[in-house]
Length: 226
Image (tube, rainbow, N blue to C red):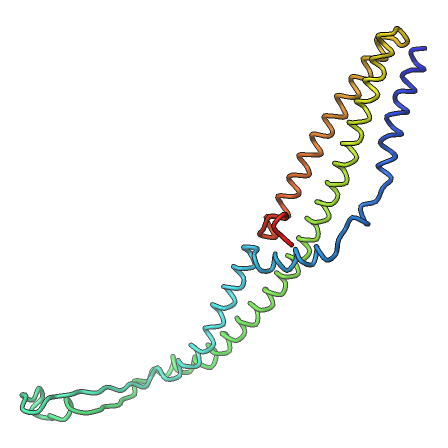
């Protein structure tokens, strides 16, 4: 008799879980939401912002390298008001007028074309890194979104399982009070109920963690996203 009740109780619990475990999460995936999350991650994720700033910083080296060709050339203007004492009596014009000059370091000047090319290549590498970063962020958003959907489905299953185990435990308690089942069968129902509620709490924790991870990469609360 005891074994019969234990078998029936276990079968009832398994049937309840299996009825929900057979469902698929694929219909729950909303690709419009997923694309929105990916776009927001590309805008808000801190690693994307760092890469964008890095790319722009490297880009500025290109015009700097181009302008550096003018480094050897210099010009100056000296002004001496009328009636003032000449600073250089030998050549008084060197303090009154425009002067131009060239100070050429041949080794440094010959490096200019290579520096300009390096600046362009560095910028190209930064652009490729930016594209790779976008791919990685897209994959990470998808991963976190799928985990989030999975945890929602799991939470539904364990919530229903906890409700069912509670109903079973209450039903068996009434039967136990009427003397229709043994104490062992009743205690087993209480153990099953405890396990079901423990699993539900674990599922709730996993759901919250998955939600936080998705919000972290998206940069916004999911509830604030239209």
